[in-house]
Length: 471
Image 1 (cartoon, one colour):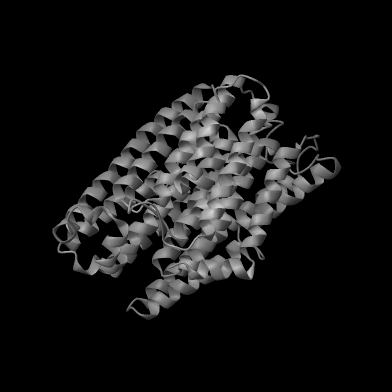
Image 2: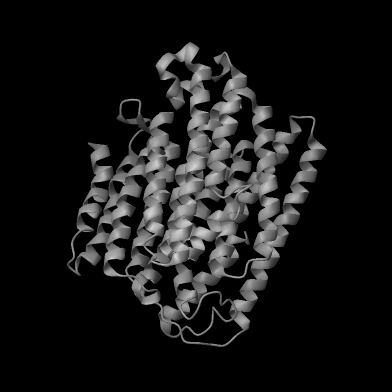
């Protein structure tokens, strides 16, 4: 029954997307709001809660990620109401976007709630394929080209994940049989796996696939190219929702890998994320437009989340995840207004807003820009404090304390490069360039207010206690 309630709004959205009546445009965001209601109900139920046997099981981790993703979905659908005010989009392309957004949401729900590696892969593949068509709703040569590029890169990444799953399954099958595909059983029997090397190989291959899907090394630019070529709500979906399905897979697999051999896991993820942040920091320094800037910044934050998670900073990783999931879509959706008078125009982008709506818009965007670089009281400020503290705590129990301190110093230097770039861009947006009048619409402003309230809610004592309770 609960699963039916979770997917029913998406099915309604899919059916309504075929209606050609102009009023159907306003029914579509309502169906997005309806997605939130069963998720709140699921969030409040005792955990773990089985939806379909041992295949789909809700626990504290995946319900938190599903709740965050549903709120992001609401913000995206609100911004879609005025998409045609900023870019050229046909009514058919608009309906098609919602059609594939509904399919995307079903795949996302399945992947996030899955307790089975195979089911997780199926949900992730469904979400991936549907986003290809959402990219193509922008009828330009660049968007069509990047949709094909995404299809190729996504196929490579998802194939790596599948191959890794096969190896992990094979490593545990002698003791678990066909149940070796279940995350909970793999975790409880991790120390008994007869072929730990085979499992570690599978984990490494699957992790590379998941990291590639998030734009990590060595494919750092493909995600930025796609988000630049597609409509800005698509970029918001990538950064705030699709990456949720990918990162929860990493969380699940790494929990098991920690039990198999924590030293190998930490070394592999640490080097990979550090290398990714090193490259991305200088790509951000050279970014010339909002979409690439925000996209590359998202890769940096997802790398930090993965690093904090394997360092034992579960609380820091989840707090950082929530802050990123609200901040980055808010900035991508703001791009529709910031670039409404021409793409690649950074100077003066925060000037020219009239009336209360315009003033509230530039204040919110200013706060989002400062929050994304972890200035207090941004949740990212606290998550990074806790995350680096977790890394130091991990080093205390090893023989690599000096190496860890050196790595943290390098990370801080790289983050300072990103900080400098964002501050320079903010100053240019606020104090340079011509002042041209820009229009802000109520629906997109409402979406930004929702994100701002959710960011503030993350810092409530009850929210922090809940995140600490997730293990």
